[in-house]
Image (tube, helix red, strand yellow):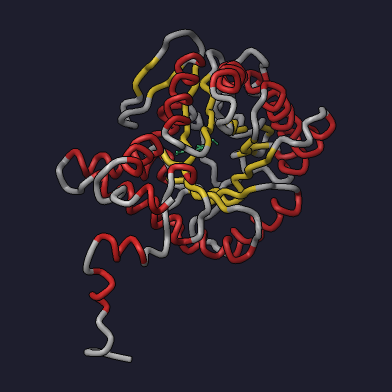
Length: 336
Ligand code: PBG
């Protein structure tokens, strides 16, 4: 059927009609908010490259989580910034570290809000790599028990989910076994199954102080050129016991999100990373793009590509926009 019988504009005529035929919806419950947690009390140290974000002490992280929970955000994802680092990243499993402390406080103050804890050693090692080093680089198998130990520490503190972001082979199976062995059979594993060696992690590494002292992460994170490899990684992690899988970064990898969505049945999560966030802010600061529209459009695009959930530093602003007026939220109530 073609023009003049078919007129595409008929369904675009009013806001109500457009809301009626919208194929993809975005709701606060589909957003996951990352938080950076450091030691101390009453600390809010702004992160220059990530406007609106700060390194938060556990009490402040709990206050932020309460605000996010009130906005209907789906979950928080905690990253730790320890006071001291060493070659094995031992602070990753200290039970009194900033992440376990924040988990306990959030579960006490906002019990209904799911708490995810990122599991990686790069924030905790003095060399900045995601595992322990041997002569040739990161020693995969020697790293596994350390990651498992950190996962158990976060589960013990009350985390609903642990999210391994290290890209070691076999870490999901190692964590599942360790969690089950420690009585945490209900702890969810959200695996960063498909994590590319990306230029878009710059602001995060700045925030977490996790720039590798030497070398790069290409020996364990994926080559941006590859998509079949992403499917192997996703399938392997699901077979090892991953309950959800993450594709990261987000916008440059929409085709990967779609391909993973079609291959596995577990929920797929897209991570709109720090560089994507910073880039939109930088352009908006110059008056080149409209930030509220751009944040809604990019997160919607990740959902349209096939992501069930989106981890985004815009979670708070976007949840607020979806609840209120403006193009992103004109029919937010009805759409939910
Ligand atoms: C830690 C980790 C990183 C990110 C999440 N977990 C950084 C990295 O691999 O260097 C990136 C998040 C972001 O850029 O927003 N392994």
